[in-house]
Length: 387
Ligand SMILES: Nc1ncnc2c1ncn2[C@@H]1O[C@H](COP(=O)(O)OP(=O)(O)OP(=O)(O)O)[C@@H](O)[C@H]1O
Ligand SMILES: [Mg+2]
Image 1 (cartoon, rainbow, N blue to C red):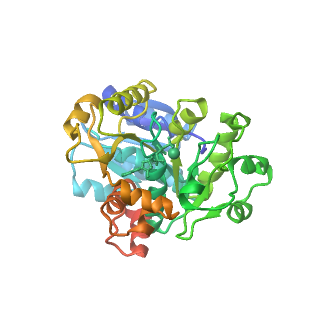
Image 2: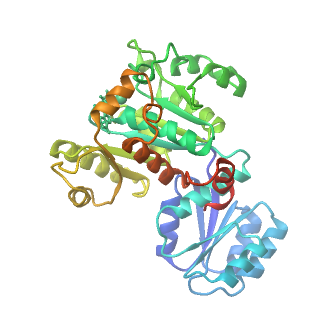
């Protein structure tokens, strides 16, 4: 994984500082807080933090000149303004002085963490993959179906490098769902890890005919304990450097391996179905992730196999989970089963079918890319414009 970097926040507002540190803890290792520019300047000169946050919610005095001075002496420093409202003149002047981005406070959604992460990744070279992990503590909820089809739809939408990573190390389902032969597995990857490079990686991984790559276990039972959490993280770190998106088909457990991958994920999609046992399990999962200190915006609830006549509605889930439903995918067993029997993704079995379109919309929501833009423009928007 990318090394965590250091940052300074210039603010007198403790709450704002806490909001920044908790949202950015996964990407920034050390935070220094200074209350005024003078004290901040000597700290910045001495310690050269990579990132600077200016709180402009109470006063903006001196910040523009200070920004220009920092950018002159330390051009690589990323500077972010925190503003109370959108002030076009200030924002324009900020960008002219060299800020990386600005945020409105109070923060809304996960914009700040995504923007800072992207800015760090861009200056570090190739942006690292975003990881979306599909999770359910109960088996049979649709984790493999959603992960596999999200990988397909994200690839179609972005034309970026997308990996479907099946972490069911005992036995994987992906090959049988997609009717693929033997695959290069995480066990093979670990064997090759010391000599792994981009060429070996892409010549070894399975590539689906629609362009997304697959790393999955064989259909026979494997010795999953032979892969330690540390080895798994090493593997993930290499994969992150070589892909734009990694979609994880997660096992139904809270093992060290699963939790490490969940921690490294940008989003976790917790799947539930419309019945009380599934909702109760989902609630435990979400509470557990809260206890682990995961950002609430990172953990998203997805209802799979949704029926209008189902025994629970969105507001029942929202009351139980204390968070909005992120997405719903309808129930259509005949279609899902037909696709699986033919070794096809849902998109291949029916591009315009309702649940295919729903998963495409979920892919749009996750990537921030709309399928209405042509692919070239989508890539540009994704890389350059969307904060
Ligand atoms: N939206 C859906 N509508 C109808 N059937 C679905 C839907 N999603 C998944 N299914 C079906 O539900 C069953 C279980 O799905 P899947 O294998 O994806 O779940 P899983 O959580 O990965 O299960 P496992 O415990 O085997 O890992 C499959 O038969 C699949 O075709
Ligand atoms: Mg599965």
